[in-house]
Every structure is written in C-alpha cells, then in structure tokens.
Image (tube, rainbow, N blue to C red; front, side):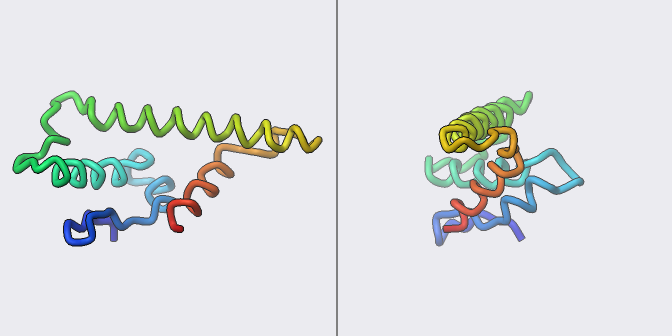
Length: 105
C-alpha cells in the first residue's frame, strides 16, 4: 500500500503499479504522496499540496515527470542508435521500466 512515512522521511509505493492503475490517471498516487512529503518537509500544518483549487500542483508535477521521461526516452534512443540498433525498440514502457528499477535501488 502506498503511503508517506514521516518517520522514514520518504514515500513507499510501487511506481509501476501506480502507473498502470486503471482506477485513476497514471502516477496520481505518486503525486499525492509527494504532496504529503513536501508538506511535511516544508513544515506546513495545512496541506500545501491541496491549496490550489485547479490542481495546478499535481498538473505541474505530472508535466515535469513527463518532460523527464521524454528526455530519458530521447537519451536511450540515441544510445542504442550509436550502437547501430534501431531506436524504435526503445518505447516509453521501456523507459518506465528503467525508471522503476532505478527508484527501487
């Protein structure tokens, strides 16, 4: 179960499960728990992450995450292309898998 742990100062979740969850948009839980983390780290008593009625906080985090994934996709495709391998074999799902493994480490 995904949760923010103040005692561990971190978030516990399965990012791949959050990405593939059919009950909500990808990474919704990740962004939600990140909001709790930021609230606590900034010493906020109220929830900084929900002060914005138009969900700009979550939208901004999602955009930054997508930009990062796009950058990773481009870099991975360049790396295989240099080796003479077709860059099309590198899909966004592959990038998700690599990122998920990095986050588990």
